[in-house]
Length: 338
Image (cartoon, rainbow, N blue to C red; front, side, top):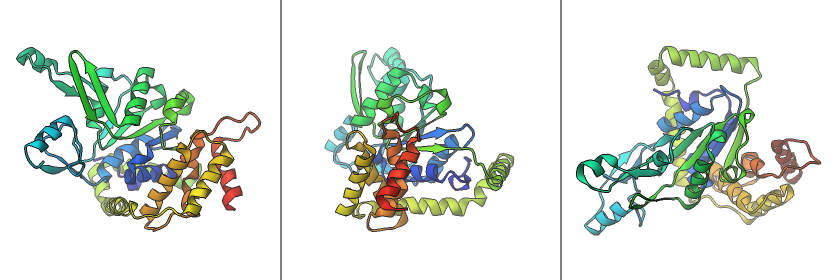
């Protein structure tokens, strides 16, 4: 029994960013940076128990979506011989350890079958396990450079290509990348930082009631995890219904031209590089509107997601020593009003 997502005290920005990414995985993942012991890993692992199951092709190693026209090589071969059977499976949330080898991440030759049967077979790695789910990297800023390069390539293409030891395998690897870390232990490479759709900063609660409540809930959970989980069953079910309803509404949420113009004006005011900022801002605002049951994206949605969508995309300004979040908030106030 994992700690319930809805039982996490405070950290509203982190929880909202994770829910937005769950509603629209195209946003590009979530980066959570902040103090130790603030619930970063707890929130990500709680997501696995919160998400409703998904439909996948039966006996597919990559859990291909039967509704898609194109799947992995095995599914394409089965499709040629008849209709694909499917079943419900949990949404995967896969941990990528810092010390993982490249073979473990991308997959490699199945040595057991190669030695016993003389067959060259592919043993899927962590990227295959994370397909259509979440790939979680704790202390992502300490990840080795060659793995960072690999994640950048796969996150951009949505496909993992393995060509080694006489093998040539190509399989889908579309996942929401979730990273957490402590900024005191090092910065994240700009190339990987830009791949995260949303970035949030978490801090240790500074008010007495919140700190007391955190300790109380954690202590109750550790003494009896099952009883604690049951006490939060209704709250977990409510959040799960929100996610399901938000996903169903996402395609119907409209983004008026006025909202697009506001998003572009905000990014221009902050001098963000490229257009990824506008795209992420609009997608996050649309997902927030779907989560809240709104039919149109408005100023309130843009203002709420502006900081997590943009603050990690700003250039450092030597003439402005304010933090990136402060600069975003200031630009939002100037554009939208207080």
